[in-house]
Image (cartoon, rainbow, N blue to C red; front, side, top):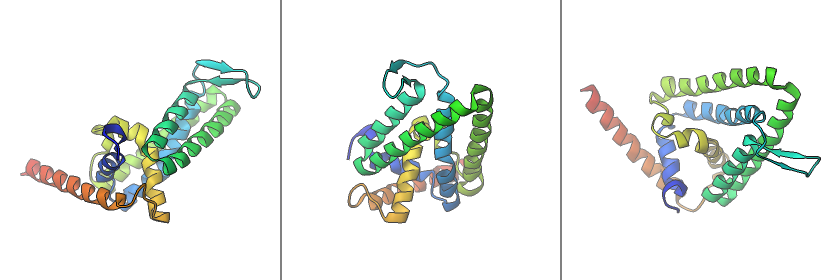
Length: 193
């Protein structure tokens, strides 16, 4: 278990406290990775920071730098699930770059806008209608933009395969989520009375 930003238990329990309704969780599983993917499409059009003369020329732009950052961060959080998340990040990068090149900027930004609006709307509906709690991005932007793809992957791995980064992780996180949700309920009741 790490400290601060790399404390996976702390980070995942914070996320989990905002995502306990099964429909909201499902909506996040459906929409978070497409947000990441379509962001990379838009980032394809940023100017290259470096050019590597490999594979016929590789421009290292904001899309590539973002994928490297996300991948390294996820592996630092948990080597096994983080490696899978890093692989998914790079697959998103390859796919998004190919799609962006095929679409060109004049069409790509419209596709990205439509996808982003749809995906964010789905998530806000999940929070407003099903979770009945504001999204975590209002309290922690890092959670919303950096950790969400990894956390929805962890949720899928846990529910389908019973994956735990280490023994006792799920039980510890569950206890912290219950505590955080109880604290939130208490604050909510005080505000309404």
